[in-house]
Amino acid sequence: MPIQVKPTGAALGAEIIGADLTQPLDDATFAQIHAAFYQYEVLYFRGRELSDEDHIRFSARFGELRKLKITKQLHVEHPEIFVISNIKKNGEHIGSYDAGIFWHTDGAYLANPHAVSALRALEVPEQNGRVLGDTNFASTSAAYDALPQSMKKRLDGLMAVQSIMHRLKQTVESGIKKDYNEAVKADPEATHPLVRVHPVNGRKCLYVTEGYTSRILGIPEDESRDLIKELTAQCVKPEFTYLHNWRKHDLVMWDDCSTQHKATFDYPETLPRLMHRTTVVAA
Ligand SMILES: O=C(O)CCC(=O)C(=O)O
Ligand SMILES: [Fe+2]
Image (cartoon, rainbow, N blue to C red; front, side, top):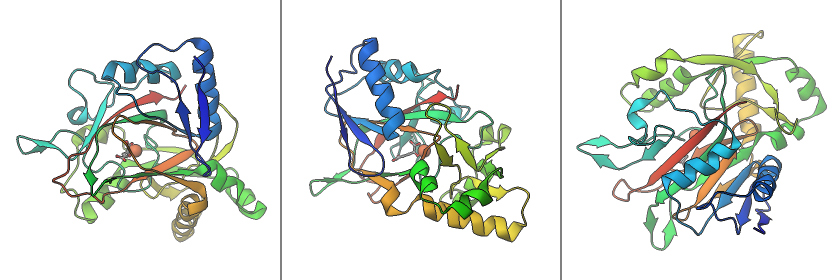
């Protein structure tokens, strides 16, 4: 099947045109998509409604899918699917309602973090002809490349703590949540290199986010705090970002080593938004 790869023109992201994800992909088509993914870091597919089975089958081509521990927000029939939604049923949200509130990389707090995430829009909030709830993506490889040599040298060999408690603390402090899901307490944090070497394309990527990075090890606490601030600001500079304006049925996938993302909460609660996400475990 001939497909077209159309770069967004931003530092990251490309649209894949002509791939029919409702059918199993042949190896040659998948190889093209795979190569484009590790080049552009974010890919999107639009225009065709996919089932959960299609979504699972396609994303599992990238590697083993993770069944998350956060049981409450998983799809009842497909535990590989994490539900993100502002919709309530019987007074309770049917999925995670605050995913993406801070810049983050999915699963960074795990010893073996996610490699790839694939998010599909089932319902999008639309107002005055515009779909709200964009997702912003940043290329942490482009952000690293643009650092001065002296900073690259300073970062060489540093390790940082990625902590779900750090995120939850900010969520509670900003009044979004009263407390947090018990299940995630089993995996509260992990230590990773501050600069990761991408396991597939070998690019160096800044692994530091507003949401999860609580501490850089081996340097004084105030220096760690300032450096986290400086590096997270570097990552999300407009020149390293791509803002995705969703359409219903879009499937957007991103690299969890070389990108970070943030959701835009600009839509009223009365407008339903429903997303399903699969995640690939790192090899
Ligand atoms: O809802 C969004 O736009 C992004 C949510 C998010 O962070 C995720 O799906 O990992
Ligand atoms: Fe996320």
